[in-house]
Image (tube, rainbow, N blue to C red; front, side, top):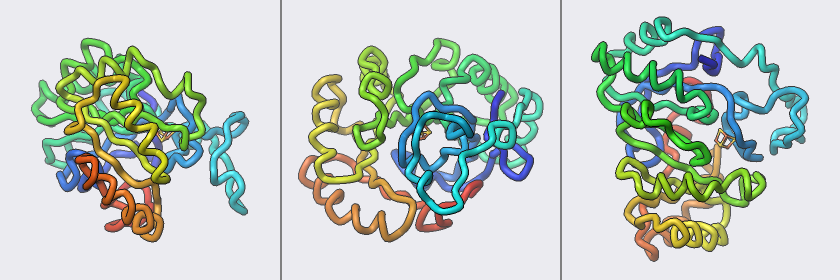
Length: 250
Ligand code: SF4
């Protein structure tokens, strides 16, 4: 499997889930490389923002910023290695994140089945952008989908970021909840349109501010918490930014 590489190893770490429905839960994070989208504000662009890619990212204009070398950022890892690394933490909760984990879902299904059979993991969450349909073998292993459909603010073309038949499937899955990244109050119109179009139950909707610094979160949370109060949606902070800063592997 293609795993994000951190200091020569697979990016696997034990932490507190910082956002979404399981916020506060101690979890092991496994970060897979590769993504089929290219959000301009992506905070894990070392999973897709390769040298030579035609896609732009907000960091491209930062002095000294360079797009990533694919070879340097991907670790090819087998199932045995991953089982061993994940078992080191003695924690029953796993969050598979990316990138977009469903790009490697066949191999992922095999890994998750082995983690359950060997009683290394009991609870499995997958974070996904909601553009790829889970296969049955994967769905069997998953307890919770944290679906984060991308809005116009992500800079992805509409046809790429909204796949109606797939959002429809997730909207009907009892395992799915929907986390929307909000950059400005006007994003609410788009979110409500998606909720209406796909019949997403409002108790499965979570609104979270865009931001990789405490200042940017504080600024957006002022108006976002009011929207959540008025509309009855759940609010999510990005607790890991407050606890650890915008760092990898924490
Ligand atoms: S879908 Fe997620 S990982 Fe992919 S580019 Fe967007 S924010 Fe980054």
